[in-house]
Length: 121
Image 1 (cartoon, rainbow, N blue to C red):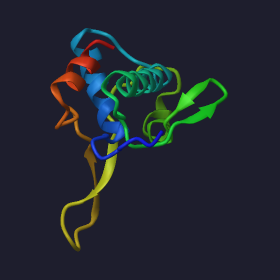
Image 2: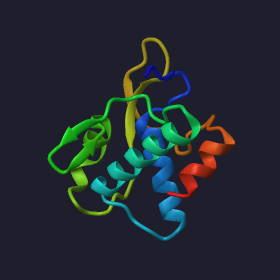
Image 3: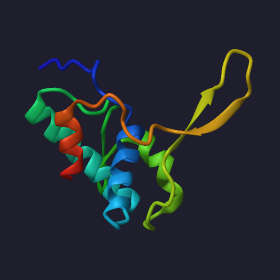
């Protein structure tokens, strides 16, 4: 089955949205738990809304599904709770030096169904 990924989001943006929801609920997430939640959200979104939530590949690793970009973004935490959102490199403008900038805190542009869906994780 071919799936349109045009409306899919960067996995770090979805992860940061999930972290924000967990923080608002007074919860913490380990990198492994975050991986699983993003994976489940992606799968459920495919099943319910008939479109992907993330636009990245998911790999089968020893302890379960992994989105490589999320692994690299949060591997420094090991099994400890994640304290900061995912960061990514961005250009300010042509000729500017690279700098770190937080990924999207809330996955902007989520449909109302996707927003409600991620809140129910």
